[in-house]
Image (cartoon, rainbow, N blue to C red; front, side):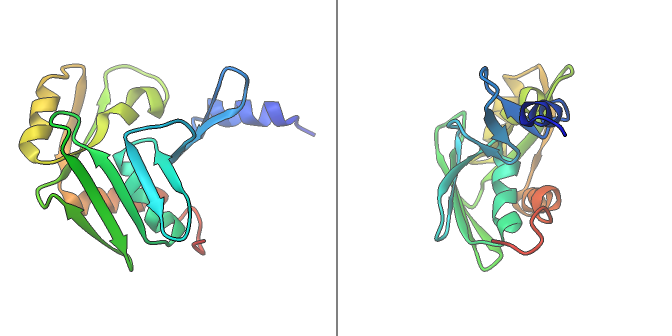
Length: 162
C-alpha cells in the first residue's frame, strides 16, 4: 500500500498538484491555496484562488455553479470581472480578453504557463504586456474562445456538478 506522501509526490511529478516545502498541498489545478490575482467567488460556496485566468474560467463549468471571477489587468490595474450565471458568462469591461502564453523552457505548468495566462482589459493592453515579456510566447483569446478553453480543460472533471 502506498504511503500518502508517496502518492502526493507522484501527483506532483505528474504536474497535477504542487507541494509546499513541508510536503503539504499548495495547489491542485485549477485551485491555489495561496493568493493569486484570480479570485473565484462560487455561488453559495467559498471564494477560491485560481492558478491562472483559464483555470478561473474552468471552475464554474467544472462545478456546474454560478460564480464571479475577479481579476485585474496586470498592465493597467483595471478590474476584470466575469460573471457566470446559468451557464452563461458576462464580462466587464466588454473589451476584456485573455492572453494565453508560456515562458520559454521546460517545467511544470505552474512555472511555465500560469503567470502567462491573464485577464486584460483590452487586446491593446495584452499586446503591450506581451511586448514587455520577450520570454513569453502566446496569443490573445477573445472571450468566447477563452471560456471554451477553460470549459474544455476542466468542465468534465466533476461530471455531476456540486
